[in-house]
Amino acid sequence: MSESRDDAQTKTRGTLLVVDGHSLAFRAFFALPAENFSTQAGQATNAVWGFATMLSQVLDSEKPDHLAVAFDMKGGTFRNEMLPQYKGTREAAPEDLLTQLPLIQKMLTALGVTYVEKQGYEGDDIIATLAAMGERSGYDTLVLSGDRDAFQLIDECVTVLYPGHHFKDLKHMTPQAVEDKYHVGPAQYPDLAALRGETADNIPGVPGVGDGFAAKWINQYGGLEGIIEHADEIGGKKGESLRENIEQVKLNRKVNALRRDVDLGIGIEDLTFGEVDADALSELFTSLEFGPRTRSKVLKSFNAGKQAGDAADKHADDEDTSSDDLRIPEAVTIADEAALAAWIDSARDGLGSPADNSDDEPRNRAHCADVMASTCALYAEGSSKPGNPGCSVLMLEVGGKAAVLEAGVIAGVRPALQRFLDGHADRIVVHGYKEQSHILASLGLDLAEPWFDTKLAGYLVQPDYHADSLEQAASHFLQLQLDNADDVAQGQLDLSGDVDPADQ
Image 1 (cartoon, rainbow, N blue to C red):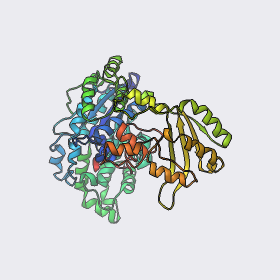
Image 2: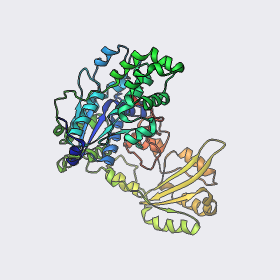
Image 3: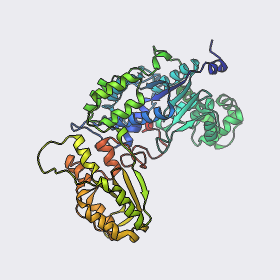
Image 4: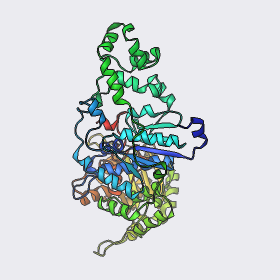
C-alpha cells in the first residue's frame, strides 16, 4: 500500500536530485565548441567539462543530500514497438559527443555518484522511477532535465529544474509554474502533449491544435478521456481534425506516459554521495588535460568528506595557485587626478622590477607568481575596430589594488595617466597589445610595448586556437569560469533559446 502524502512529508529527510544525464551532456556539448575544448591528441572534452561545471553549479545552489544520474542506452525501447517511427527523425548524435559519454560516466564513478541505465527503457523512465522512489521515501525530489516530458512528474514533492535561456537561470517548475505556462496541471500535461504532438520525438498530434486549444478542451471536458467521449460535440475544422486523428492521440498518450516502476535493482540508500576516488578523478582529469582549478571546483561540490579533500591535496601541485587563491582586487573608482595619484601611491609598493628572465633557468610556478605580483595588469574595454576605435572603461591592477577609470574621466587625468604608463611599461601586462593600444589611442593615450601579452602567449602555446575574449582565454587555458562575466567561453556555456538539448 502506498504511503499518504502527509506521512511522506512528516518523514522528509532531505533532497534527492535526479539528473537527466543525456540532456545535460547534450546541453554541455552544444554550449561549448569542441575545437576549444579538446586534448592535444584530439579527444573532445567540452561535454565532460560542461557536464561537471553545470552539475557542480546545481549542487552548490540546491545542496541535495542524495543524487542519481539517469542515462539512455543504445537500442530501441518498448515505445518503438508501439510507435515504430518514434524518434525516427532525430539525427544521430555527433561522434565527438558519443566518445565523451563513457568519460562522463567514468567521472561520475570516480565522484562516487550512482548512474543508472536500463536496456529497453529510456532515461526518462529511470528518472520517473527514481522520483517515485524518492517521494515514497519522504524526500523532496528535484529533477534536472530539459525534456518537457518530465513535467508530468511534478507535484508538491517533485520539482523539475528546467534550463532556460541561460543554464544557470534554472526554472523551478512547480505545479503552479506548469499551470501558469500551459493552463493545465502537471497530471494533465501528457494529455496536452498527446493532442499537440511532439515534433522532436516524431509523434504526430492533431493538425491545427496547439497548446492553447488543447488546454481549452482539457479544462472543458476534464481531460483526454472526456475529450474523446465528447469528440462528436466539438465543431469546426479542429473538431473534425480531432475525430480523424483520435486513434493517434490515444496512442500518443500511451507513448508519452513515463514508467514509474522500472526494476532498477537499487534503493534510496544507494543514492547517497559516495566516497570520492580522488586518485581516479585526478588520473581522468589529467588525461583530459583539465587544470587543477577544475579538479578543485568539482571536488568541492562533490566532496563526501575530509578524506576526499586530503586525497585531492595529495595530487595538487604544491606550487599551484588553486581557485581559493583567486581574489577579487580591491577596486577604486578614479574620479580625478588626485584620486589617481592616491591610487598610484598605494600601489607603488607592488610595482617592483620584474625578475630577469634572460637566462634559461627553469622557472617554477611560485617564481612566476612572484614575478606577476610585481607587474601592472591593464585592460581597456571598448572597440579596437580600425578607423572607429573607442573605449568605455580602463582598468589597472597592481598587487591586489585595482583602479577603474570611466572614459569620461580619462580626459581630465590623461597627463598623469600617460606618465604612469610610460614609467611602468616594462611592468605592464595586457591581453592583446595591438587591440589594447588601438582602444587607448582613441583616448589620446599611447601604450608602449608591454612586458607581457597573455593573448600572444596563448597563440605561442596553441597557434591553432584563437580566444576572442579574455573570458574565453581564461576558460580554455585555465578552466577558469569568471563569475562576473556574462558568459563562459564566449557565451557558450549558456545555450541561446529555451531548447531541450535532447531534442537536438
